Image (cartoon, helix red, strand yellow):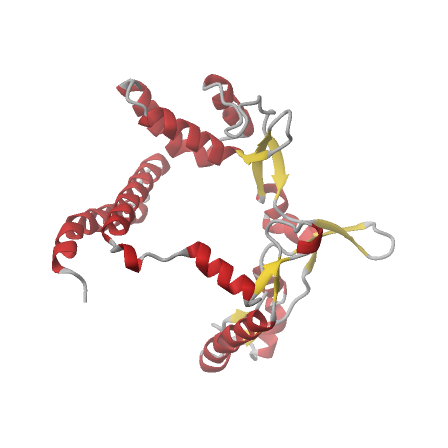
Length: 273
């Protein structure tokens, strides 16, 4: 049962988050200008962060989750480990051990029991390779990319929008920053997601941004495609990608699924991947 004193402290913060959430929904329903919606969403994120920080500060020390110990335990028990660890490993790639495989299998079985059997969704299992025309039509080839920047000496990469956000928030938090600049930074942060490479490059120059690790100069923005490209077939002439999502395989099989469902709508389809 929650401590009444803690709940009393958190109540106004939760009310503040709810109030801002209602405002965001109202603006979206009324189709308000995008800039107004973004400002409201940014304020909602700020209020949520304040609430989360307060909840964490009020949590008794013995109830805090020790992530480092948890990760050490599941690696020692070989739930999972970094792929190719004996060769140094690769960030973001993992191998499941016996317990990890069993856990994954149980989760998929529960998912299948609910969504496929109880909800009667149509399950498919599509190719993990997708030819380029499919992802061009969906817009992935054009838009599925992040702007990056590199340390000119070490070659270390940074995601540019995250770098700009962290740099500007640091300036904003400094005591000697003028109110006018703080207000301008808030406007920039609201517009950051929609900025072009040229606009982000201008921000880098204006605020004299350097590598947060080494202090070295940074390269101009570089577009990094988040999809892994490959060649399909022995000739290597058919360009393709490892699928960035499972939805495209379902979309391109819509007609076959509709026929399987005897032409009846609506229906739902799903796959694991």
